[in-house]
Length: 406
Ligand SMILES: Cc1cc2nc3c(=O)[nH]c(=O)nc-3n(C[C@H](O)[C@H](O)[C@H](O)COP(=O)(O)O)c2cc1C
Image (cartoon, rainbow, N blue to C red; front, side, top):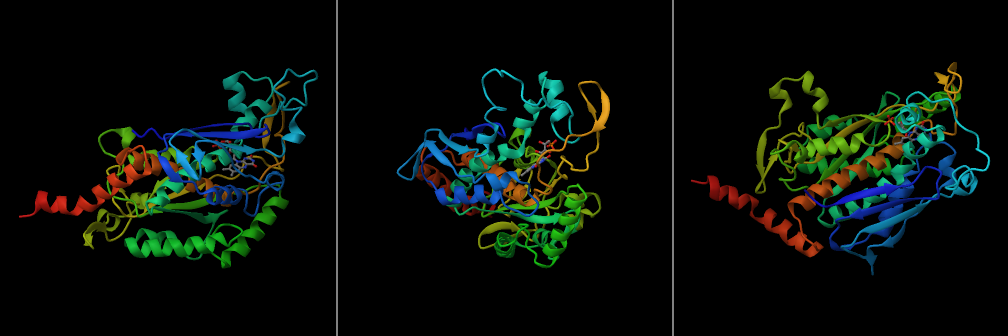
């Protein structure tokens, strides 16, 4: 498997987030603008709480990049937490002289209770800090560097909101993407992304945006929260990424894992998988066609992956983020200091974070695809990888003719 991997460190209200990306080739042109754009986009979206007004995430590259290009050594990125100033006592690494407000009431749906049980903590704050989605800023940075690598080979990534609180985009675009050929799907994805990038909800829809914003306002007034669904896609991938030879080399399984690992994501579907329980085989599967010396599919219910291997069609992923767990109208919980029934703790929180999640989902998909891309076309420099990539691509059709031709 590819050596590309990343590690993140950082607590939600700590000094900073750190990400180290290892296994990148040398000579990847580093797109600083794209990195800061994705970090800024992760902070946007209607329905977020007060924290995102404090943080203005920017990436400080501390190693692995020189003269605008990667060196092949680990790339380290730091994202400072501006809010740290307000938390320096609570988050101090040194022993407390006086224990700052200990948290004893866990929130349902968060990692408060499970973290305390697992790590033997005496303050729920210790669970909250690392389980918070603040970590996804670091993950977005790692995924965006992977996106740069994919972009270099003309592989493009897309991600936008499909629904919030059960209200779907009017365009019903997912059904169109599943039933489109390769080129029309790419054009549609480009159009949808352009619309989503202008939307406060990162949703390609102007009609429903108003209705959804009204719904979020009402939900917020009621002290409640919402979730939603996101479509994430990659186009211009070669066939042949991933493998059926072993479970951990299957591309669809790896994508599901990286997307599901994002906070609050509870469902991941590749292509039209959700329809697999109702459609017949003849309606579900994609016919194989030959277009410009490429074996493609007439439709894309498979979401660009068959047998754990990319087909060359767009990779399509639909994922669902559950409603935010912190409620201003809280559910019942137990106060751990005396086991009495009590309302769960309120704390500063988002009401809806689906638009932000769409940015994180793109990063998660990018990283996994870059791992599988480097696995197949491995090399130490971008040039070497480029040679391996174009060699495979240029021969893929003629080899089939040699192997099967009369
Ligand atoms: C971008 C983003 C922002 C989030 N913001 C919050 C928040 O403000 N409050 C909250 O309770 N949960 C928030 N979450 C969700 C929690 O981090 C998540 O529910 C928690 O870590 C428990 O993990 P689980 O839901 O995956 O089981 C957010 C998730 C994402 C992806």
